[in-house]
Image: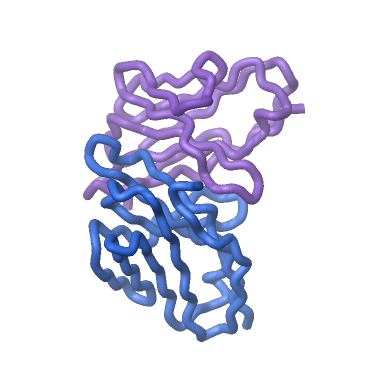
Length: 114
Length: 113
């Protein structure tokens, strides 16, 4: 079946630094990918829609200058958390529209900012 | 009011019992309905996908959608301890916003041996 890979699975960074998370569709092309954030014991909240070759579309309340999204190819989207702070610590998950209009999620990336 | 409401549980059932999960929603534009299973510290795994109203069965899983009541259900027959996980309902309005999913809070299910 369709596979979406995320890297890294977990990362710890110091406050004020930036961290990049990659999302790859391994066996299909994805013109659109999506980035979600999930805080402990809460559901997934859509952050932004990543469009190949164009700017990302951000949901209300999500800072586009803080969460930089780049969709450089049909199989790769990256999320960069800039100037990270402890409150940015969360589980970040990407998804991509795969075959037969189904949505496949990556395994997620745990970010801890210390 | 949230667009998608889902009881967070936990829901505890004995092995072999039927697990019954449901979500209600307020946005009548939703047309695509999905159920995902999420194990702790992992990404969601797609279980069932339904378009518009009706029933869909896949092995031990049955998904039902009642658009007139804005109510969807997932039933798991012959539940196993390995079914213990958080189950998330998700919905999408259609082609223009395909992939932009609204999730329920997730129901934690515990199947006891």
